[in-house]
Length: 242
Ligand SMILES: [Fe+2]
Ligand SMILES: [Fe+2]
Image (cartoon, rainbow, N blue to C red; front, side):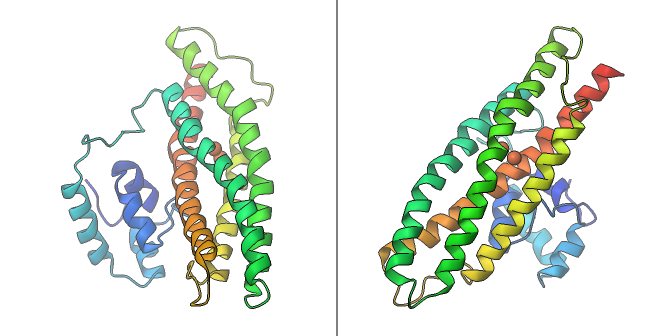
Protein backbone atom coordinates (compact mmCIF):
# COMPACT_ATOMS: atom_id res chain seq x y z
CA UNK A 1 0.00 0.00 0.00
CA UNK A 2 1.40 3.38 -1.03
CA UNK A 3 1.63 6.19 1.53
CA UNK A 4 3.20 9.64 1.43
CA UNK A 5 5.95 8.85 3.94
CA UNK A 6 7.47 6.27 1.56
CA UNK A 7 10.48 7.32 -0.49
CA UNK A 8 10.01 7.83 -4.22
CA UNK A 9 12.22 4.80 -4.75
CA UNK A 10 9.98 2.64 -2.56
CA UNK A 11 6.90 3.76 -4.47
CA UNK A 12 8.62 2.98 -7.80
CA UNK A 13 9.45 -0.53 -6.57
CA UNK A 14 6.02 -1.20 -5.08
CA UNK A 15 4.10 0.25 -8.02
CA UNK A 16 6.23 -0.10 -11.19
CA UNK A 17 3.60 1.75 -13.26
CA UNK A 18 4.28 4.86 -11.14
CA UNK A 19 7.56 5.47 -12.98
CA UNK A 20 5.62 6.67 -16.03
CA UNK A 21 3.82 9.24 -13.88
CA UNK A 22 7.11 10.27 -12.26
CA UNK A 23 8.59 10.86 -15.72
CA UNK A 24 5.67 13.11 -16.64
CA UNK A 25 6.00 15.06 -13.39
CA UNK A 26 9.81 15.19 -13.80
CA UNK A 27 10.11 13.64 -10.36
CA UNK A 28 13.43 11.83 -9.89
CA UNK A 29 12.88 8.17 -8.98
CA UNK A 30 16.26 6.68 -9.86
CA UNK A 31 19.45 8.44 -8.67
CA UNK A 32 17.67 10.94 -6.41
CA UNK A 33 14.86 8.59 -5.41
CA UNK A 34 15.84 8.23 -1.80
CA UNK A 35 13.68 11.15 -0.65
CA UNK A 36 10.27 10.87 0.96
CA UNK A 37 7.44 11.48 -1.50
CA UNK A 38 6.32 14.54 0.47
CA UNK A 39 9.73 16.19 0.16
CA UNK A 40 10.11 15.28 -3.53
CA UNK A 41 6.67 16.74 -4.32
CA UNK A 42 7.50 19.95 -2.45
CA UNK A 43 10.68 20.31 -4.52
CA UNK A 44 8.67 20.35 -7.76
CA UNK A 45 5.90 22.49 -6.27
CA UNK A 46 3.08 19.92 -6.30
CA UNK A 47 0.85 19.00 -3.37
CA UNK A 48 1.63 15.48 -2.19
CA UNK A 49 -2.12 14.81 -1.91
CA UNK A 50 -2.51 15.54 -5.59
CA UNK A 51 0.26 13.08 -6.48
CA UNK A 52 -1.24 10.46 -4.16
CA UNK A 53 -4.51 10.82 -6.09
CA UNK A 54 -2.69 10.35 -9.39
CA UNK A 55 -0.89 7.28 -8.03
CA UNK A 56 -4.21 5.89 -6.92
CA UNK A 57 -5.68 6.20 -10.40
CA UNK A 58 -2.51 4.79 -12.01
CA UNK A 59 -2.76 1.70 -9.80
CA UNK A 60 -6.45 1.28 -10.61
CA UNK A 61 -6.24 1.88 -14.33
CA UNK A 62 -3.22 -0.38 -14.80
CA UNK A 63 -3.52 -3.15 -12.26
CA UNK A 64 -0.38 -5.00 -11.31
CA UNK A 65 -0.12 -8.32 -13.09
CA UNK A 66 -1.80 -7.03 -16.22
CA UNK A 67 1.31 -7.34 -18.36
CA UNK A 68 3.40 -5.49 -15.77
CA UNK A 69 6.46 -7.45 -14.71
CA UNK A 70 7.27 -7.60 -11.01
CA UNK A 71 11.02 -7.07 -11.21
CA UNK A 72 11.41 -7.70 -7.49
CA UNK A 73 10.31 -11.30 -7.97
CA UNK A 74 11.94 -11.98 -11.34
CA UNK A 75 14.91 -14.41 -11.07
CA UNK A 76 18.15 -12.36 -11.13
CA UNK A 77 19.34 -13.95 -14.39
CA UNK A 78 16.08 -12.90 -16.07
CA UNK A 79 16.26 -9.42 -14.61
CA UNK A 80 19.78 -9.06 -16.01
CA UNK A 81 18.65 -10.42 -19.40
CA UNK A 82 15.84 -7.86 -19.41
CA UNK A 83 18.22 -4.99 -18.61
CA UNK A 84 20.62 -6.08 -21.34
CA UNK A 85 18.06 -6.87 -24.04
CA UNK A 86 15.88 -3.85 -23.41
CA UNK A 87 18.04 -1.05 -22.08
CA UNK A 88 21.63 -1.81 -23.14
CA UNK A 89 20.54 -2.62 -26.70
CA UNK A 90 18.39 0.54 -26.96
CA UNK A 91 21.06 2.79 -25.43
CA UNK A 92 23.73 1.56 -27.83
CA UNK A 93 21.47 1.91 -30.88
CA UNK A 94 20.41 5.41 -29.90
CA UNK A 95 23.91 6.59 -29.03
CA UNK A 96 25.09 5.73 -32.56
CA UNK A 97 22.04 7.29 -34.21
CA UNK A 98 21.88 10.44 -32.08
CA UNK A 99 25.59 11.20 -32.24
CA UNK A 100 25.17 11.45 -36.02
CA UNK A 101 21.83 13.27 -35.90
CA UNK A 102 23.10 15.85 -33.40
CA UNK A 103 26.06 16.66 -35.67
CA UNK A 104 23.65 17.17 -38.58
CA UNK A 105 21.36 19.45 -36.53
CA UNK A 106 24.31 21.42 -35.13
CA UNK A 107 25.68 22.09 -38.61
CA UNK A 108 22.26 23.25 -39.87
CA UNK A 109 21.13 25.29 -36.84
CA UNK A 110 24.17 25.80 -34.61
CA UNK A 111 24.67 29.35 -35.79
CA UNK A 112 21.16 30.52 -34.87
CA UNK A 113 20.91 28.28 -31.83
CA UNK A 114 24.28 28.26 -30.08
CA UNK A 115 22.86 26.13 -27.23
CA UNK A 116 22.97 23.20 -29.67
CA UNK A 117 26.75 23.11 -29.32
CA UNK A 118 26.28 22.59 -25.59
CA UNK A 119 23.68 19.87 -26.29
CA UNK A 120 26.15 18.11 -28.60
CA UNK A 121 28.98 18.35 -26.07
CA UNK A 122 26.81 17.09 -23.19
CA UNK A 123 25.52 14.16 -25.23
CA UNK A 124 29.05 13.30 -26.30
CA UNK A 125 30.19 13.25 -22.66
CA UNK A 126 27.19 11.13 -21.71
CA UNK A 127 28.00 8.58 -24.43
CA UNK A 128 31.70 8.56 -23.52
CA UNK A 129 30.68 7.75 -19.92
CA UNK A 130 27.98 5.20 -20.75
CA UNK A 131 30.00 3.07 -23.17
CA UNK A 132 32.67 1.90 -20.67
CA UNK A 133 30.03 1.85 -17.91
CA UNK A 134 27.85 -0.67 -19.75
CA UNK A 135 30.94 -2.62 -20.81
CA UNK A 136 31.93 -3.06 -17.13
CA UNK A 137 28.41 -4.18 -16.23
CA UNK A 138 28.31 -6.63 -19.13
CA UNK A 139 31.80 -8.06 -18.66
CA UNK A 140 32.33 -8.00 -14.91
CA UNK A 141 29.42 -7.15 -12.65
CA UNK A 142 26.46 -8.88 -14.32
CA UNK A 143 28.32 -12.17 -14.98
CA UNK A 144 29.30 -12.22 -11.30
CA UNK A 145 25.70 -11.62 -10.17
CA UNK A 146 24.48 -14.36 -12.55
CA UNK A 147 27.11 -16.77 -11.20
CA UNK A 148 26.05 -15.86 -7.68
CA UNK A 149 22.41 -16.60 -8.52
CA UNK A 150 23.26 -19.97 -10.16
CA UNK A 151 25.45 -20.96 -7.21
CA UNK A 152 22.61 -20.13 -4.86
CA UNK A 153 20.17 -22.27 -6.88
CA UNK A 154 22.63 -25.17 -6.85
CA UNK A 155 23.37 -24.68 -3.15
CA UNK A 156 27.06 -24.29 -3.93
CA UNK A 157 29.57 -21.75 -2.62
CA UNK A 158 29.60 -18.14 -3.83
CA UNK A 159 31.90 -17.65 -6.85
CA UNK A 160 35.29 -15.97 -6.45
CA UNK A 161 34.94 -12.19 -6.53
CA UNK A 162 38.10 -10.58 -7.98
CA UNK A 163 36.88 -7.20 -6.69
CA UNK A 164 36.47 -8.35 -3.07
CA UNK A 165 32.75 -7.93 -2.58
CA UNK A 166 29.97 -6.97 -4.98
CA UNK A 167 29.55 -3.75 -2.98
CA UNK A 168 32.70 -2.36 -4.61
CA UNK A 169 31.71 -2.46 -8.30
CA UNK A 170 28.14 -1.53 -7.32
CA UNK A 171 29.37 1.60 -5.54
CA UNK A 172 31.31 2.55 -8.66
CA UNK A 173 28.33 1.90 -10.97
CA UNK A 174 26.07 4.01 -8.74
CA UNK A 175 28.52 6.90 -8.82
CA UNK A 176 28.56 6.66 -12.60
CA UNK A 177 24.74 6.60 -12.63
CA UNK A 178 24.73 9.81 -10.57
CA UNK A 179 27.06 11.44 -13.09
CA UNK A 180 24.81 10.35 -15.98
CA UNK A 181 21.74 11.64 -14.11
CA UNK A 182 23.45 15.01 -13.70
CA UNK A 183 24.19 15.24 -17.43
CA UNK A 184 20.55 14.38 -18.20
CA UNK A 185 19.44 17.24 -15.94
CA UNK A 186 21.81 19.65 -17.70
CA UNK A 187 20.52 18.50 -21.10
CA UNK A 188 16.97 19.16 -19.98
CA UNK A 189 17.90 22.67 -18.85
CA UNK A 190 19.89 23.57 -21.98
CA UNK A 191 17.09 22.34 -24.28
CA UNK A 192 14.35 24.11 -22.22
CA UNK A 193 12.69 20.75 -21.56
CA UNK A 194 13.34 19.57 -25.11
CA UNK A 195 11.27 22.31 -26.70
CA UNK A 196 12.04 22.70 -30.42
CA UNK A 197 12.27 26.39 -31.42
CA UNK A 198 9.77 27.64 -34.01
CA UNK A 199 12.41 27.75 -36.75
CA UNK A 200 13.63 24.21 -35.98
CA UNK A 201 13.39 21.67 -38.80
CA UNK A 202 12.13 18.09 -38.67
CA UNK A 203 15.62 16.81 -37.76
CA UNK A 204 15.81 19.29 -34.88
CA UNK A 205 12.46 18.09 -33.59
CA UNK A 206 13.42 14.43 -34.11
CA UNK A 207 16.65 14.97 -32.16
CA UNK A 208 14.90 16.57 -29.17
CA UNK A 209 12.16 13.98 -29.15
CA UNK A 210 14.72 11.16 -29.29
CA UNK A 211 16.87 12.73 -26.57
CA UNK A 212 13.84 12.93 -24.32
CA UNK A 213 13.02 9.27 -25.00
CA UNK A 214 16.68 8.42 -24.32
CA UNK A 215 16.39 10.18 -20.95
CA UNK A 216 13.23 8.29 -20.07
CA UNK A 217 14.77 4.93 -20.95
CA UNK A 218 17.94 5.70 -18.99
CA UNK A 219 15.91 6.65 -15.92
CA UNK A 220 14.09 3.32 -16.05
CA UNK A 221 17.37 1.49 -16.69
CA UNK A 222 19.11 3.12 -13.71
CA UNK A 223 16.06 2.53 -11.53
CA UNK A 224 16.14 -1.22 -12.28
CA UNK A 225 19.85 -1.38 -11.45
CA UNK A 226 20.10 0.97 -8.44
CA UNK A 227 16.80 0.12 -6.79
CA UNK A 228 16.20 -3.51 -7.67
CA UNK A 229 19.16 -5.44 -9.11
CA UNK A 230 21.93 -4.03 -6.90
CA UNK A 231 20.16 -4.34 -3.52
CA UNK A 232 19.11 -7.89 -4.41
CA UNK A 233 22.68 -8.82 -5.43
CA UNK A 234 24.12 -7.38 -2.21
CA UNK A 235 21.54 -9.21 -0.15
CA UNK A 236 22.21 -12.52 -1.93
CA UNK A 237 25.98 -12.22 -1.58
CA UNK A 238 25.68 -11.33 2.09
CA UNK A 239 23.46 -14.34 2.65
CA UNK A 240 25.80 -16.69 0.76
CA UNK A 241 29.01 -15.53 2.41
CA UNK A 242 27.65 -15.27 5.96
FE1 LIG B 1 23.10 -0.96 -17.30
FE1 LIG C 1 24.31 1.04 -15.08
